[in-house]
Image (cartoon, rainbow, N blue to C red; front, side):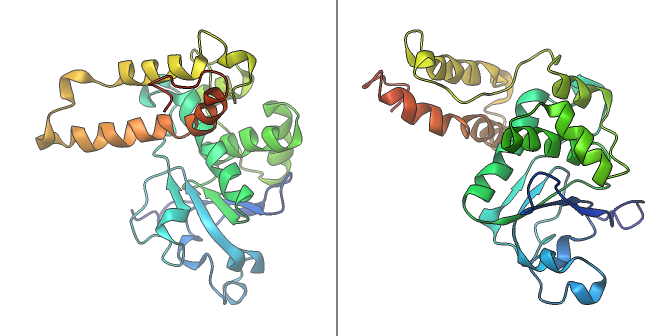
Length: 239
């Protein structure tokens, strides 16, 4: 995707709650992990970036120095209409957890959309709340001081306020794993969410699309599954 004509794509700041996370626009992607980022007027720390979380459409070679397995992509539409983004609360929180997973693996991470105005500060605020223990709105306030153009749209703000229509994923506890097991229920919900009328239509690419959607939803359940296996061993949906 060519975003060169968009304003604000050169924005880049350090996350106020985590020095190992940089947030910004799309213009930096070709230079992430490069030894000469400083000569381009970019923070030298961007040369240490080894993982990327993209919140907009990008080409396969958008970040050529980043290994494919360390580049997570979430195609979010910057729209105040919740209908434009299926399972918005879940996807936003899943993106924040992708950042957390990369950081736990020791990566310096770059989180971005096109202009870092709505999608990026939203996910950055969710992640900030995870690492700081505070609220999403408190995290957004800190991010807004560093990222002056931060302005999440109304639907994203509903997620940050906790007023979105569908609640997001949270890690399971031992109590959750007692019958009825929440991980099991979530797996059943995942399969119910798939558009069954299109699942076999290879001509329109629906099989590929649904597979990506399914894997996206199942990713956070890995930890939940391992926890629940300790308390409900042998459940066929959890093995």
